[in-house]
Length: 237
Ligand code: NUP
Image (cartoon, rainbow, N blue to C red; front, side, top):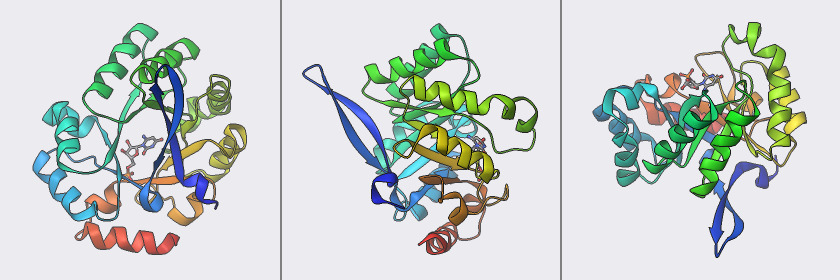
């Protein structure tokens, strides 16, 4: 894999001109921090941030600790935060969700694609106003996604390309689908892929098509999150 694929880009505005800034996912692993208590979250982060610089947090932690947990993590750890809120509403509501989440300090936010162009565009524009970026969720990793999402996921990926979106989420548990989504979004896009570990995906295989693997329970439920993480990193290098 070329080095350039280990990055996702963000846009900054300087004197009204847009510049792409490069964000790197260290070791190609994103920690899904789906714990519910700040004390547990901080303990895992203390053990893992030597090897990681990007984490994903979702409803588990933000609903139990409140959205200020995003700000607190940013203040205490040198990590980029992807907020996995799977935004899926009408455009006006999406805009508010994205703006507020990013204003709490999240660097990026995951947005559902099935809601369509207007809803996704509202998210993209809200993020760009804050010089940040969205990830477009194409197909999901769990078996149930085969019924409703799979038939439309390639169209979602194509819509993302047409809208100029550069960052995508696609499943590590369905490598054939991940591969197809990569073909659609192209080598220049940045794909992060959940489903490694407990859901059955394998990091090394996933990284043939994705730029970073998202891993949650295998790390945060392990007796030694740092050793588990080190072993995963070893398995992909
Ligand atoms: O398709 C998806 N599958 C998935 O597991 C999209 C996601 N965003 N996720 C998230 O990735 C899920 O909510 C969890 O935060 C993480 C996977 O966690 P784990 O299965 O490694 O524990």
